[in-house]
Image (cartoon, rainbow, N blue to C red; front, top):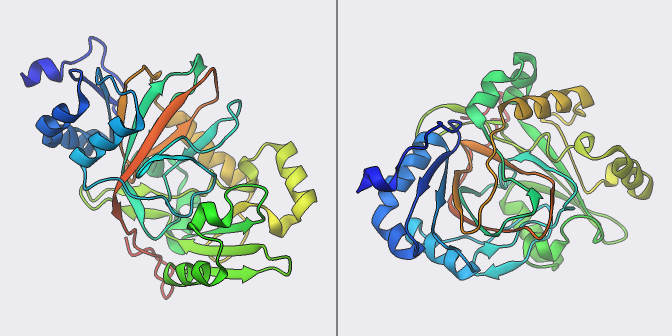
Length: 330
């Protein structure tokens, strides 16, 4: 039965994606093959399951409840997204004609999802793949000069919540009450600076290299390039800088000691991701299960009415950088 369910394609697919076929009816299938599916995710970093006939947010929630302890709510999201069922979200608001670069979901948070479950209810007309890259391979492929400093110092994320660009306070924290936001930030190692106009500026320091708890492999786990000002389109960066000033960008990243990250370093990171990217077009009803620590993902530009939902599950706490030695505890 397993040989029929997990049939091998005639031409092997890239190692970051294993495609398996399942019968219609996602919930019973998930009950029966949970161990096998999660074993494949552990072995390969991501798995695509076809033939599940997923149609609604409730369908994805049902699978998440059977494969995991259940979906978790997003906190600190960088862009607004609609919650369609408990713990099931639409894709983050992002222009369809712009690529959302490689990243690990919420890698800047103290509590990150360990698993991502994507469901395609409607594929785009063209493009729009949720592409993948192996984080351990990315680490090994980056120049040592890039890796060593981030491994020593970690990285900083600077954010400005101005209510106009990116997620608002209530979208990111679930509240716009200043005391509640301050309490959350204090508990999660986030520095806060309230501006005279009521806007909030935050800074948080995180590890850039983390050891996978199951495999022991060191992974390039961060959003240094994705949330950098140098990954923005030049015209967008120029507009935001003119509108809010260099210190008021909705987000940018720095070395762990606060130094700016040069544009050529960001270019090198994005180039390495591009070299290691694997992709497969979405088909209606597909389920993709991704190990969020092991595997980075992106959303490519597209045309048409793309509808891909996500549930986040199995939260974990990445070790923080050791401030005394400058080395990540991983």
